[in-house]
Image (tube, rainbow, N blue to C red; front, side, top):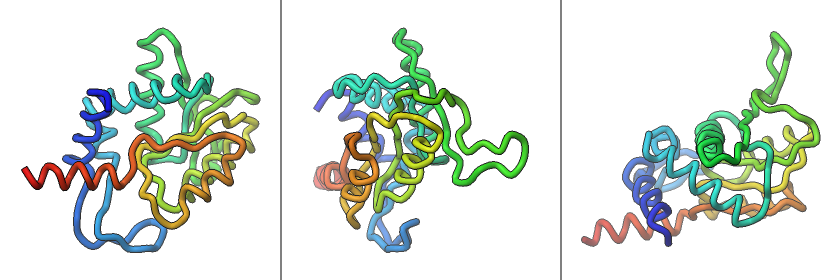
Length: 193
């Protein structure tokens, strides 16, 4: 594991991982909760997220023109990647997918980058059932984007989430930077020290 990847995993464990009894947006319950926004909205966390997302995209050869996903979890990921890509001299724009079309103004569901036919990567912070990721994939395709990859920061490894996203994303591949197992293992290792 690279130093940047290990640092981001440590930040997720410190800032985003909570034990207890939680109701999930999917309707299920869990003995842990991961709020990635406390990491993706952290100054150092945002930098690491932007770097690692772009590194993963480059390693997979996706070459997108833009990156985005369903608001709110995807927003800081898309913006961090856009900023870092600009600094690297290989700009990748960002877009945000609203949960529903605006009922005023231009009535857009996609905000930011909106060039039809563009190659895009869909991002999400946490994937449980995959519902929010799938909504973003569908909205992007309806807007005329070509989805070339789907990436989530953390896959909870539950409720057929991966299978649901893979089916919706096909033929685009789905990858996770981290899994819940990796995060739990990191937390457990730190508690043992």
